[in-house]
Image (cartoon, rainbow, N blue to C red):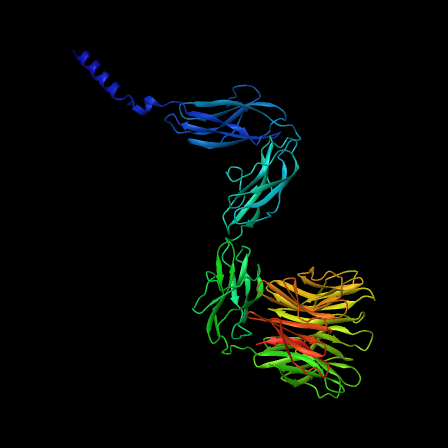
Length: 635
């Protein structure tokens, strides 16, 4: 009985001392691992790795890859150790032999044992194979949404470049892992790439890339910024000038086109504030940025107007600051004329206001007033007066004479007032060898020629900040070059012929010059618009343009044409001629001025100085003495 009890007690003690088995102990196994495909393969190295998706219930104590030149490599051969734990890991194989097939398996070890992933193979490259060499081209042709770049693959690394292009991003060093890339052919050499889908006003990084069997290499990181989205232009309105009962002058300055070309510009006006281009009362004065002038016409006397400059681009229309002015009360404008009349022994320089003459010189010496300009209440005239030795260039302001700076005489032919600045075009002698083409600003002379050739200027016009002068320079007895100077820079209007210019007018961005050009044996009356000549006569008889005035879309020219016996005073409107005289006596139309709908011309018919208003003549002199009307201004 004692023996049985002892056996039972021994069995109980033995069972109680055994280790308890848990569910984890029962389920533990080797890990689950897969092998990553080989990349960046060279002659001595490659990159691979693995992914441990299950640790088998026990911690991973070591992981890596093993490789061999025979299938099913194991840990006892070449292998890496790449950390612990589950998940993705990378491995670098080194010490390889060139041009050799290798077998690779990832492995993972826990307390239960070692598991191997699927086997992959790859072949190491030849000893001369490497990544390509590529450089990145700087971005060009940059817009809001596109740009151009590219690259140059200078070395394929010993293996064919299978794809190349550029990749880009808003962060540095973009790669081909991005969707923002191009594919631009294969092989070595220069390639171009079109970058699209960009955002305006954004900084981008771009790199060229080239891929061969070894891998992908990149050029340098090039940075560029896309263009800003366009806006409406920036414009200011020019101060109102030359106010009459029916007209005024203004314009504008466009300092920025907003990133889109200005397709139309001008001024708009009305009798209420903030006029817009929806009104019919507006001008159209060219395109592009810069300063332009505008003629405001069709106004009512003694009326207050509001004016704004405008500029339109693809985004919309911008307006300048609003200005107001009031037209004059007189329904009849004042007509100012310059000229001369023989005084019995000498020619006397004269001006006329509404037909009433004022002598500018005393008749002691010959003199002539050749041009007239009215600014505010001031009347300016320019011309010349002989001093007993030579002609002296003169400027008269309200009848008071100033001799313009000169060395050995000269002539004043044209006067223009812009704000407080007074410009005169003419010539001044330099004693030897020839007179120089000259423009005076506030009696400070600027020579436009060097005196080596005979030269003269006959007209000046100021538009915004630009000063235009027309004249000529004589090359030899058969060649005279008509010239247009803009801010002192000359443009030739003809070559190999003889041409003389007398007239100049600037309307918006268009520059008109008038004169004559030889067509042996006669001269043809011509207008040059922006340097392109248009003939007003056919060359059968001598003819010349002496004055130009542009009003809206209409171009008026005054001058003369010989009829085979006498010179006939002529007015051309848009190239269509009107005879102002009957050809009985020599006659000349020397100046034209448009005021509202009225066309004023001055000149001479026989010995008589005359004004034609809408073709109807009024005599300024009685014909007893030789006289001529040379310039006209309406205010």
